[in-house]
Length: 204
Image 1 (cartoon, one colour):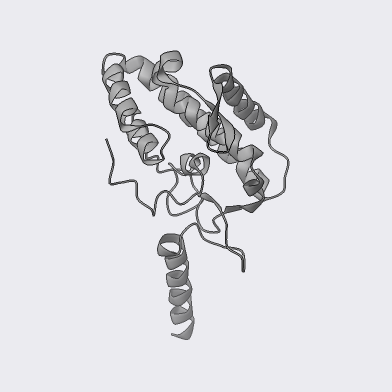
Image 2 (cartoon, one colour):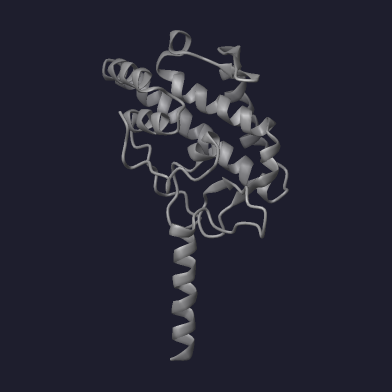
């Protein structure tokens, strides 16, 4: 179920919730290149982001094949939550209030996921967990919502950054100058190329 399309260059958020909001967006601030084209793509991303196991994804894929309308509705809801979360987290990077509609959408999705979750020990602490028995096809969407809840309670939220070139968000764990780009190999390289082109054009 692994997908070679999800690589270290596309999972750069530093947290599953950020990798989730980064499943759409292209070379600009426009959110116009959605990589979750269908429920199967959602499952593949969830495995790559470690929100689902391979076995869970395989079982959900079989269930989705027999309930395509339900699977599509789950994906639509997940994408709506993703965009509301992106709006809120982008406002967070600007130290601005969260827009009310997006804040309510994020809160509603997290509350719904928590209602189906149980508190379980994970290593030295505890975390909310949910399983397919309670949620069925909605499992990856619920786990994405729980990931968002985890991020919003994390001290790493203070390190949240928005790429200066595209719409992607990431945790900046560097100790020096704040990171400007989601990835030097993509947006950083494009920005350098653009500066070089402008300089050459100005010199001509």
